[in-house]
Amino acid sequence: MPQRGRPRGFDREEALRRAMEVFWTQGYDNASLADLTRAMGINAPSLYATFGSKEALFHEAVELYVRTEGSGIWEQVETAPTARAAIAHVLRATAEAFTRGDTPRGCMIVLAAPQMQGANAQVCDALKAHRQANGCLLERRLKRAVEEGELPASTDCRALASYFVTVQHGMSIQARDGASRETLQAIADCAMASWSALTS
Amino acid sequence: MPQRGRPRGFDREEALRRAMEVFWTQGYDNASLADLTRAMGINAPSLYATFGSKEALFHEAVELYVRTEGSGIWEQVETAPTARAAIAHVLRATAEAFTRGDTPRGCMIVLAAPQMQGANAQVCDALKAHRQANGCLLERRLKRAVEEGELPASTDCRALASYFVTVQHGMSIQARDGASRETLQAIADCAMASWSALTS
DNA sequence: AAAATTATGTAGTGATCGATACATAAACAA
DNA sequence: TTGTTTATGTATCGATCACTACATAATTTT
Image (cartoon, rainbow over all chains, first blue to last red; front, side, top):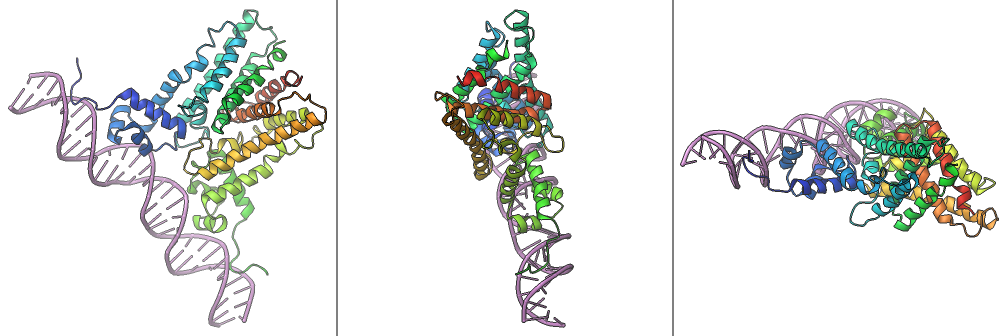
């Protein structure tokens, strides 16, 4: 059955993308409905009719972020030939993505609600779950590398995963503070310099 | 001349300490005056008469934080016998301080206003300045280590300082996400594992 | 055509935000 | 005592928060 009633006067995906950028830049709480509707080019009733609530809009924005902005960083972890190459790519892609110029600096998942005790607990929990998923992704990749013989059985995969995820999170703060792409790349190189010491 | 007029009915330092914990836990924007006055045990007019404004109270809270909570992490950087010992202490003390149990997890300077684009730009700038001061402190210590012969002249002191500060910032996110002291200590050990590779 | 359905713009809702006016209380100075 | 000064509690300020009631516009169905 085709759509009935008056057709929507704006592009849903484009409006969501605009909302994502507002949340990315200002965080969940600091992004007011006035900010959102202005950036999206619509009025509040259209926002609520289309997305349900500010929180529901945020969750959709997070999914869009993970699908679009985050994929270039994390999607190659499974397919990279080695765990070392996978993690090196994560850090290199992070340095590049966080200083792209046409997008806000740093990671929305890290920066949008770090207090963990704001007005909305579900928002904090969703972001925390995404952060921890990245850690688990790295840990699984490292464990696979042990199974495949790339790394010795004595490797502390959980510690390594926590370490590299910590560096990647810290890079969000550095990026927001204005660190250049070269600086972020140097940080990534320093982090990778511990590879041989950590895997022997 | 002694004080005139009605004496203050509460302890200024204690009230400031309570306010610091609220800002530390909830961040600047999410800490409402109702939250602050409730924690401080005073009413709004007393807060304004004593501290001036929410922003001024926050700045005082930051100074108190740096003076009390941050000192155990950073104060030994200059006095440590080697740059390596200094940075190892920073990371070790961070793992301990961020999981103390009786204080909020993670660093107030990192977590209190990371969006860098909230309601108040001066709040963000003040926190950013404190973050960068720590990076400069490490960089100066590393440069001194080069001069003293601990590190080779080829050492990229700025890159190393950025790297270790990045790890320290990332540990705030991990701590807020619930990482144990052992996990944070393991992260610190992984970060230090790159020392020999980075200084040769 | 008329009815049904969905979207939009205007104009507001009560709640909460940071901040204050004002009268009163509690101290010292005269 | 009387006056001065500072602090406190009550009760609020205008602004902004997320959100929505309602009438109207724009489309499909009958």
